[in-house]
Image (cartoon, rainbow, N blue to C red; front, top):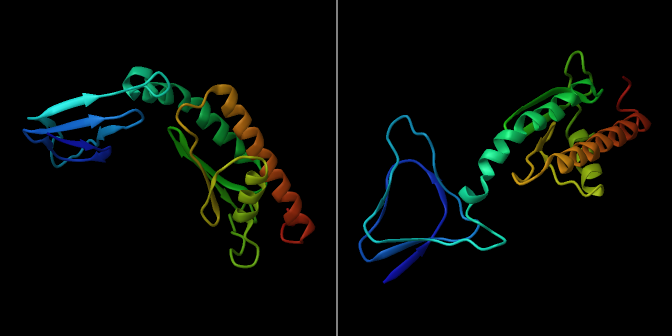
Length: 180
């Protein structure tokens, strides 16, 4: 009997053929998107094995997505709190994902020159120096924490992020790139 191990996000039907076994291991997420064009189904003609461990239960057992949904208003409150920072032109997000636009002028939303100033990279480097891993996307910083994060850890994350923005602002001012 053939065993198939996989995790996916997709649309449409997935069929486990007769004689095959779908094994869902610890930490694997099997999720179907809500597709407008077609319904999604998991059709098992063979076998299905779902394994968890004490350390890595199957996500439905620990309600990972419910936890993230409950914590997302707190996450979004933290993201929006950056709207008053002199370097932030826009604070945006949905659920447990957020982004901060790094700007030279808050009123006009004028961007820093990416090639010569690299303000987003400065924020990123300051964050990494503080043990915080964020995504630098040129003039935007993306924040996507692990969904198992708790409120205390979230407050710590955003405290480190604010320190990173403050240190970057000080650097940009000392280099003559920020007058605000």
